[in-house]
Length: 366
Image 1 (tube, helix red, strand yellow):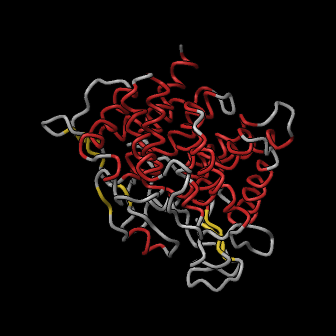
Image 2: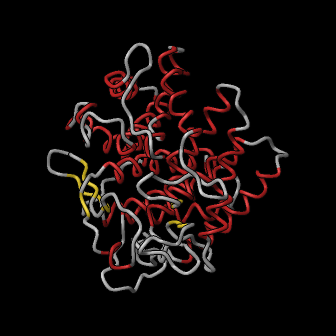
């Protein structure tokens, strides 16, 4: 693969520009749906806008939302799963910029899902109704950032405690001895993949990436003396040290099943590597870990460019080896999942990582 001498922010724009040229906002796959695939990608596009003030990035995100939400804040979304909440981050950004009430009304509908979702006996949100009594690491990202930000924007600070309860339950039931986290937990222990303790049997990269990204982001939302701030800082520090120990020495990337690099069929996966880069860069920027860790993020980013990124002759960005959407399963299930090029999971994570790495280098290194 050919690597051009571009900044991380330049790469973020190339990735976004490629997909924006290929798809009208409503055509982003899966087309015509309120869905977290689009939400992840468009959150990255908004990050570019906030970094550059280039309005066409903002306009693209706004068009996606406005095509799905009417002037009274009505829209169609799945009401039985955490995944539907993630694109609500777009609503909060648009409301803050425009002060249009329709965005607040739509956001409130997502917020009130928290009152109707099924929960475990300990109060943990089911990931989806079709996965009864299961908590997934993915869910903390799907609902957590929106819930905290909504609470702060609309005077419900107690919502932060709701998210922290979910995080504590995930940590209680999925943390592994090596410092990483299993993909999820089944309180009923009825799922075919469930171990004797109820947790998933493997550490899946992208789910752990969502968890790493959420925890590094939430800390700064607490007051300086809040006890959860110190607790989560330790969580992030331990997780990043564990991640570094499983970073591929040659490329700096991470494996689909993170802690089994020598496993049959295991491979270096793009989306989780992007999310880990984001978390490390964010943790360095915020001072949660030593500045020396930025070298590990940069090594991984260079590995992405050399091993997974391709520019076609027309300059179109291509990110390879992105695992498609994935449930919880056994080792063979993860390594046999189909991979794709430019799946929104991966391109969205790449843009988020690129902008965050750019920000960290500017603020930490000057």
